[in-house]
Length: 415
Image 1 (cartoon, rainbow, N blue to C red):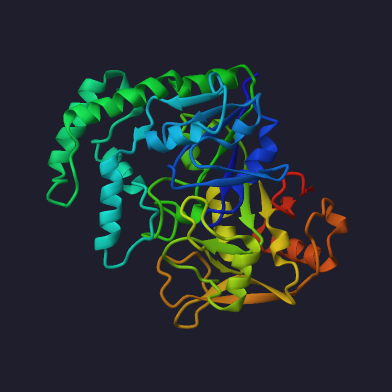
Image 2: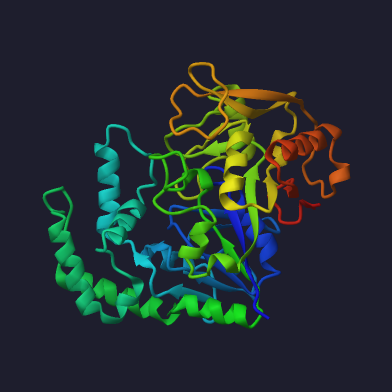
C-alpha cells in the first residue's frame, strides 16, 4: 500500500529546533529527506549529552536504519558536504544525493559576500553562496551534481561562466583549468557513489509502503514568496517546497508538523515585530543559547508572535504543532504573546501585512512560572505554563501535540 510522506516545517524565521523533532521522530521512518536550502542552515541535536551540528545531511543519519536523502531542491557545497560526511562512518546505502541538486562553487560564495558588502541595506546572509547559486539555477546557468560524471565538460562550462560574470574585474579570482579540473575530479570520486535519481528512489519506497519524513531548513517567514521579503532566503521554505524539492506530489504529503519556539528569534536583518532589544532579549538569548549553528551570530530575540505563527500554519496546512524551548521561559515573572498587529495609523490589521513599516505588536500578558525543564507530562507542568499553551492553541487554531522542555531528545511531552 502506498504511503504518504510526512513533513516537518519551521513556522518562524528558522532555528526553531526542527533538528530535535526530526531526530526524535526519525526512528519511526525509513527515509528522511532534506528538500531545500544549503549549508546556511544548521540543526543542533543533543543525544545522551553529545551535541551534533548538521548542515546538509538529514537528521535521520543518527539512526542506523534510516536512509537519508539530499533532494534536488538543495544547493550543495561539495567541500562543506564532504567535511560533514567525515563525522560518520559507513554512509554507503544510508546517504543518497539527488543528481539534480545544484552545486555551490567558490565564485558563488565570492559573489554572495560581495553583494552583501555593496548593498545599501544588507540582507544579512551567511555568505555561503546560497543566493547566487539559486540565482544561477533560476537563470538556467547553474551546474548540477550529476554533471560531475564528466568533469572535463563541467570544468569548461564553469570557467566560461566565470568569465561571463566578469569575476576578475569584480575583484575575484578565476582558477586555472588544471586546478579546477583536479578539484572537480576529487569531488566526483568522493560524491558520485552517493548520487542517484532520488525522486525515483522515493516513489519506489512509497509504493512499497515505506515511511518518509521530509525535513525543512530555515522557516516559513524566510520563504522567498511568503516571507518578510526581501529579508528572506532564496528557496521555498513552506510545505510546497517539499514537493518541488523532492519530486513528491502534493497528494502524497501526509501529516504536516509545524515547529515553533515558545518565544521568537531571527538571524540577519529584516522585520521582527516582537523583538526585545533590551534586558529581556538578552536574557532570552543567553538562556536559550541563541547563537547560530552555522555562523555563531547572536540571534535577535523577542516574545512569541502568534499572528505570524497563525499565518504560517495556514500557509503550510499545519496539522499539528510542536513547541520548542518552553524551559527557556522558566523564571520570567511575566510572559507576553503578540495577538494582533497595529499599523502606523492605529488600525488593527486583519491580515498579514505586505509592508512592516510602523507595525507594532499588541500583547497579551501571562503570569510566569518557575520550572518546566525536564518535565515529560503535560499535567505536571506548572499551571501557568499549561494556561499559556492552551491559550496559544485558541489563538492559532492548531494543537501543540509535542512540547520540548530541554535540548535532550527524551525531555518531550506528547499530547
